[in-house]
Length: 68
Image (cartoon, rainbow, N blue to C red; front, side):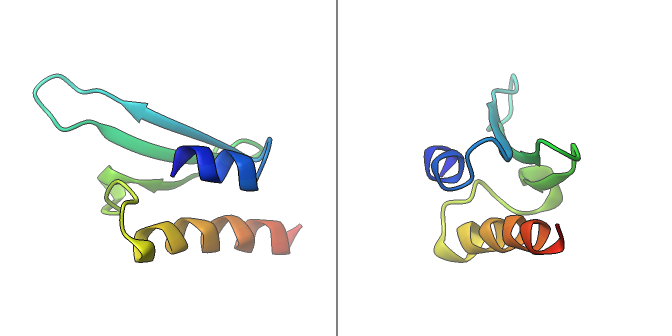
């Protein structure tokens, strides 16, 4: 998912996978221009493994682009 997002939206998003000791890790997608976190496991969005989770992230990015 990280590669697909950075290729589809070059320079627009930052995708981080962070390892947490004793936890399953974090997957965070952030809009570079605003610093807004648009997806994370902590927000209840999971690791963006299902089609629904992936589409939710893409829709959020597209909403931002449409508002510009």
